[in-house]
Length: 93
Image 1 (cartoon, rainbow, N blue to C red):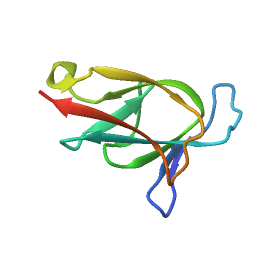
Image 2: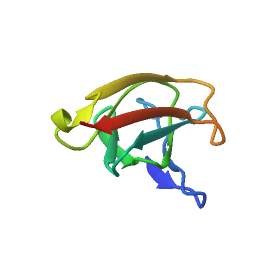
Image 3: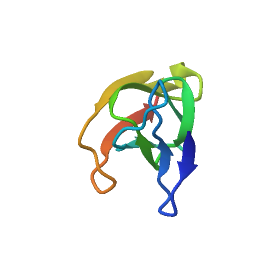
Image 4: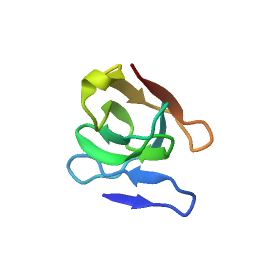
């Protein structure tokens, strides 16, 4: 389930099996604006705070992977708030 709060935070908070967990927050930075995927699903764009379920995720950008480094990031979301999201970066080559 995806929605957007009035603060501009995008959320994807349904866990597999339909349960809802305490949300976690991720900010994906890049020197160019790109679409962000988490676990193979489009969830927003770079430089937006994304609301996700806690746990392990694979984050990548929706573009040919050879244009970016790293190609993907494996992260664990735990204790990330809207004010202090987990921040990761991708760079163009």
